[in-house]
Amino acid sequence: MPLRRLDHVNLRTANLEGMIDFYTRILGLSVGPRPDFAFPGAWLYCEGQAIVHLVGVDAPPAPYRRDQQLEHFAVAADDMPAFLAVLEAEGIPFRPVDLPGMPITQINLNDPDGNHLHVDFKH
Image (cartoon, rainbow, N blue to C red):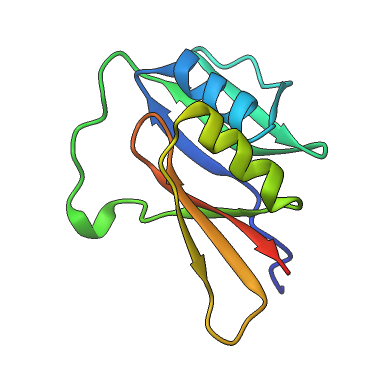
């Protein structure tokens, strides 16, 4: 049974509206269908696939041990100049990293809850 792809990332947040705003307005995802769970949340879609699942919580999640934390997740995209223009216009700090020996630039940033993610661009 070979794996085919990463299906989604599930993030708990006490800032549901802020996280929805970031992932839709900054990363271009769209809010889409979600099962009728008994708790608040949102599923955010990219090209018909729900890739970010947000779960609303009443308080910020308790700190995890360092070895249990999500270090980062990554998504691939096109048009790096347009994405950088959005980040700069919104005042969102980022750090570009060119991968040695590979034609990929990673744009590292954090969402409103401090989760590290990077958007990868091939060149």
